[in-house]
Structure formats: structure tokens, C-alpha cells
Length: 350
Image (cartoon, rainbow, N blue to C red; front, side, top):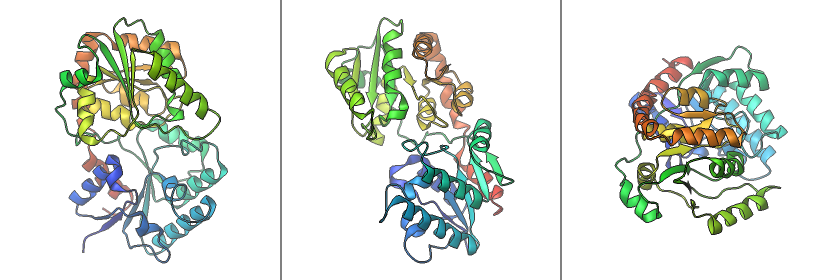
């Protein structure tokens, strides 16, 4: 009888989880990706391995009752699975949910997951250190495995056609900020650094759905973006979900991908840009320094708009842009199958 893994994070909406599911299947595991298999009342579905990624998805934004009640239910279900013999692995994507960085509920749940885990998975050594500074880790087994590449996205986008659609001439240096526009991603820092960069023919494309969380900065962010869309000819905003089949075209049109996170542990967008052979500009914080340092990229001091501007200037060098094509080869070494095998072994199932 084949082993089974419960990966309760909605495969259809997340390529990271989808690629892990495929890797487990290639190892011979039966994969159940339904959150309901873990959360439905009563005994959860049987599994030999439960691989959690973002615990908050399972109590913050779904289910009935207040979040604290849903969190308690999640922990009871994990206890039931472990009592039935399941091993629990948790990949540390964040040290706390992005939109709730200091909430006691999330601190409690993250600590409870750590306490129950048989294996904690990190995407860099820095993650191990930062986790231990914030939580009690004890002697739980830990594994460092690289963030898998995104070569599964369709490639072969048409640079010229995409630039024509965007109204951006071929001789312009195009920086791409890709993914959901959220408060922690430093939109104000991005705009300040871009305006200060001494790159005469620079353009910025901000592509992704607008998802600023409600709060004190929400109105300011909305007004800033409205001003940008109306009065800045060098900046184009496409605030919409970008389907998988369009990602290759945007990457082909761009010369470099830029990140402006004020605080970040991991970034799938950095790996995405490298997977397409693009130079990535990002803050030297969390795992980003290690990821970007593996290829031809530019890092800068986090939360420093002038440092970001200087990094954009370096990234605009045509020789650097051309050399960054090797990033695709670097990213291909970050193999999903190898990660899945290491997790299975680390969790004691090999």
C-alpha cells in the first residue's frame, strides 16, 4: 500500500504547493490537497505525512466561528493525525502572517505547530537562526532545502508584442514589480527608489492584484497609486490577477525584476524571476541575500530608498542584464524532487 501525504493548501491556486504535490506523487505518495481533509469535523483523513506551509490559511480566512476557535480546531485535528501515526513537517515561509505580524493568536499557533512538528523545513540557514530567536524550537529535527524553481510556468513570451501592448519602447529599461500589491512589499519604497534612480530611459511595470490589507495605511496607499496611474508616464500599473499563461510574456518584456519588501523571509517572486533568467533586485534580508547571491542579481540595504536607487542603476547595465540569463540555470538546480525526498527522510518515513 502506498504512503499518503496531506498537503492541505489548495493546489489550484498555488504553484509552489502544486509542484510539491507532483514531486510527492513521483515518489509514489498519494496526495490529498483538500483543506477539508484536515479540517472537517470528526476524524481527519488518514495520512502518513502532513506537510504544512502557511498555518494561518487554515484558521484565519476560512471556516466558521472566530479565528481563535478555528485555530484550536486545527490543532486538535493535527493532534488526532499524529495520534494515528502521521508525521508532521512544516515549511517556514514566514515567521508570522504578513498581515498579522505581532498578533498573539498567530504567535500561539506557530509555536503550537513547532511543538508538534517532527521536521521543520527552512529555505536558508538564516531562517533557522531567525526562527530560534522568535520561538522555542528545542531539539526538533530541522532541514535546509532551497525554494524550488518555477520552470513549470509556460515560457516563450513575446517581448516585442508585450512591450507594444504596454506602450513601452524597446530601448527603454523596464523594471517589473510582480505579484500581489500588499502593504509589506514596500510600495512607497519602490516608487521612491525608482524615481531617484539615475537611469534615463527607465520604466516601471507594477503587475498583480491590489491587496492592501485594511488598516491605517490603506487610504494612503490607494491615493498614492491613484496619483501614480494618473500622472506618472514612466510607471504603468496593471492591477489584476495575472494568469499563468501571461507570466512568461511579462518576464520576457522586463529587463529586471524588482522587490522592495520592508521585511521578508522568503520570496517566490525572486525565484520566479531567476527561473526566467532575469536579474532580480531585492533587499538583503531573510533568505533573499542567499538566493540572489547564487546568481547574477543586485541586493541593497532594506528600507533604504537611496540604496534601492543605486541597485536599480547597477541593474540597468546591459552587460549585467545579459549575464543574468544564467540565473535560469542556477534556479533549475533547486529541485522539487530532491526537496521531497529530503523531507520524507527527515520526517522518518524513508
